[in-house]
Length: 260
Image 1: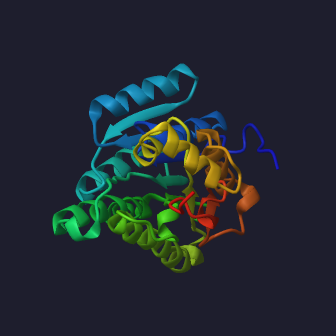
Image 2 (image 1 turned 90 degrees about the vertical axis):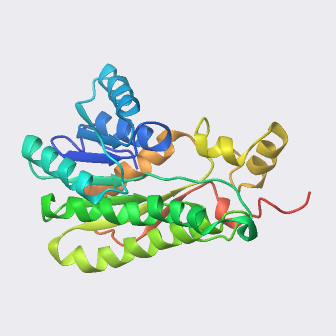
Image 3 (image 1 turned 180 degrees about the vertical axis):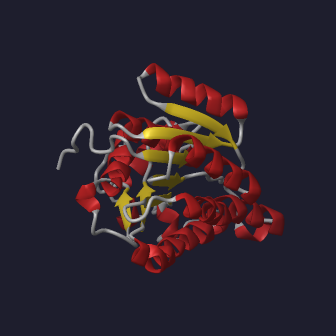
């Protein structure tokens, strides 16, 4: 199903974690479909550069520096955006961190760091946005990962955090659905030219093994995730809530670490 080129026209969207990678690609796609954007990330310099990239492509965007681990900062950003643009229609929460370490060598602080950014950060974003949502019809989308469903070595912290995001998505969909707010998630697989894939595929041989293990033997593109998010935000998905779309080329079906 193709999306109407103006299916998000006039809607106010906030994309958190949009300084680069998948989330910047999502922001670009939402903007290309007519959404008025506010993008958020921790680094002022990086989020300003991302906004310049979007403006160069004709996207209506403002940028804001804020850390998902700081609820007060997020609340201030949401209020600023709502005061300037009106009620918020779409929020994407995509800030994330990750690194590889065996659980036996992982410090409690290392585990906490990823949970703070990924899981608690997601809650902070949605909680801060809630008072400003245009209801009914508001849409919240969380970016999760295949680690939510598949145990992976050296990923205990990320697996736990992403599984928490999936359940948080379902809980908020249940609680906020009566107000007309839809809450969903998208789980990207290996996406070309992103930091996440660079960390997963540390050399060409490993990259080829990962690609070959996918049910669809190719790496995804940012537009793949952008389209999945845009569909969830459109009227075409008006009866969809509490679900996670696996946009991963079938990553969850295989075993990336199986011997050759």
